[in-house]
Structures are given as structure tokens and as C-alpha cells.
Length: 138
Image 1 (cartoon, rainbow, N blue to C red):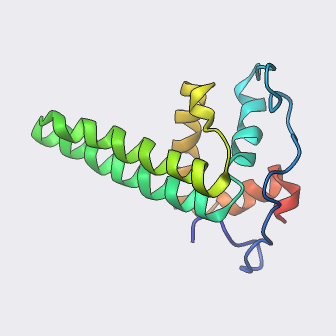
Image 2 (image 1 turned 90 degrees about the vertical axis):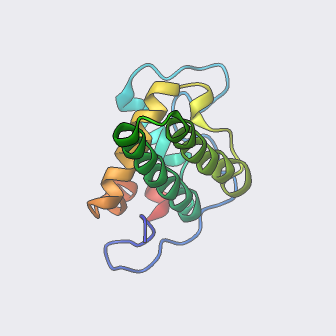
Image 3 (image 1 turned 180 degrees about the vertical axis):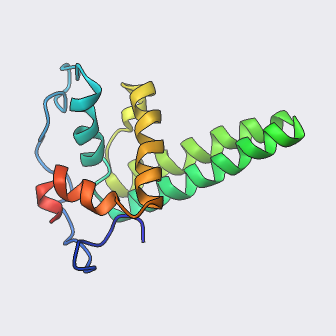
């Protein structure tokens, strides 16, 4: 499924519930200064397979709603895109990952990273990215 198998196809072992801060900027009060530093932090905030699955579902539905909005011009689809995208993501953070969504602190980088993670999952390259940036997920 979405980024939950290693190169051998076997699932990654589960990660600890709340790992110690791993990235600069992961500590309250410190801001991450570049997108290059943010991306590994973002992946760390999405370490659980179900977090990524719910993000993938929400982003897919949101894209469908945006296409429907563009085709029909009905604003309800635009609102539905926001509800699906953020709703699935926030549920995954609060109830699965048990962390605070990066959207609250880094809204643009978080949005960009959500689409990047979605694209990598569609291309079958998310596992490699996770292995490269999250050694504990190997």
C-alpha cells in the first residue's frame, strides 16, 4: 500500500509511539529554516503507515473535488476539497500519529509536502524516500 513496505516488500517494523526529536526544528520554539530541512521532519511526522494512508485518501479526494470544482464551477466542491484534505490529515495526526499537524506551523511547506508525498506514493517511490530519511523505518 502507500509507503508501508521496504525494498523486500515486507512491512517496516512499527515505530515507537512518540520518538525523541530527530530533526532541527522538531523542538518547540525552533523554526526550520529551509524546505530541505523541513522534508525529513515532515516524513518523521508521518512515520506510521495509517497516517500516510489517510493522507493519501484525503489528498486523492481533495484532488477529485478540485477537478469537479473546475469542471462545474460549483463552490461546494472547493469547500469539500478543503474538508477532505485537511479532515483526513488532521484525524490521522490526532488519532494515529498522536502529534500536531505541521500545517499549524508551516502551512505552505506542509501543503507542498503533502502533494509531494502523494506523488511519491503514486509513483511507488515513497518507501525509498522513507528509508533514506527515516533510518528507524528500515
